[in-house]
Image 1 (spheres, rainbow, N blue to C red):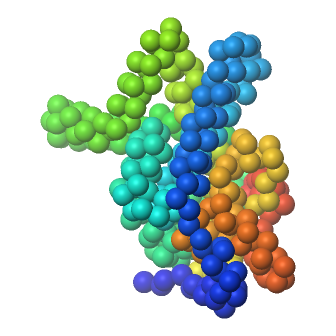
Image 2 (image 1 turned 180 degrees about the vertical axis):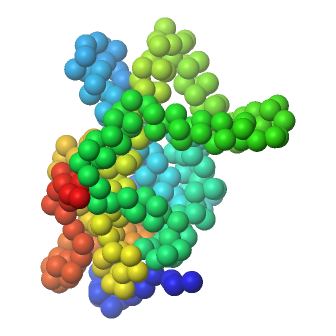
Amino acid sequence: MAVAPRVKPLDLFTPEEWTRISARSSWRGIWMVAHAWGVILAAGALFVAFPNPLTYVLAVMLIGARQLGLAILMHEAAHGGLHPNHKINDWLGEWLCAAPTGASLASYRPYHLSHHKYAQQAEDPDLVLSAPFPTTRASLWRKVIRDLTGQTFFKQRFGPLLGKMKGGAPKGAIFAGEIARQRPFLLWNLGILVVLSALGLWWAWLALWIVPMATWFPLVTRLRNIAEHALVAKNEPDPFRHARTTHANLIERALIAPYYVNFHAEHHMFMHTPCWNLPLAHRVLEKKGLTQGMLTAPGYRSVLTQASSR
């Protein structure tokens, strides 16, 4: 198997620079998790206080983007970046980031580290995400519509269960196994529903948690995947070009790319660097004239235009 070429940080940075870039924190990860949940609560409260179509659409977009933010912070935990203490890191990543969105840190970590090990090589498990691109504009729009209408959510959430149901295994055993696998996600949703019901807002669980998860979350997850790895050469020998860094403005950071996920080229080069230090890594590389060799894009619209140019 071909392991992706690596870059040695001290070939690029002085020891002092690398100490700053690689420094971990016992509070930044906790703050970012709290921030994600704070934005979710604030966006929901905005619609509850001022119910109208505009505030609802805005709430769905903000909450869906922070649900992606929780997934990104789970990804950070997979690299041990949320907290220097391994147990605290994994607890934050599993129970406050992964479980609420139906993911599992324990399952995600080995899969994702394999992606880093074989980035853009034949063994990369994420190649399937970038393989369809470039595609046509019509094909991209069909994907967007499937995301925004909940079709992608339904397929991802219930597709595996329906596939098992078509087999010959006992239906009771299948349901029991699925409930056991989804227990953290179900407990979180039950808890959210109970709390909202106690506040007289039972409907908000569906309107302000499930709807964002079924619409905006899948869409921005797709946009993030396209920006990071679409149109990146397979078997790329240059570690500066294993992934793309997309320059994101304030609106893009709020609605598409939270928590520095857009600095993906730097993340692949220095995968154990905490996400909040990736902008610093980019600035130092830029001062050294090294970002010219990186794969970058000026914004998400630019990447999507390239990805739908066939």
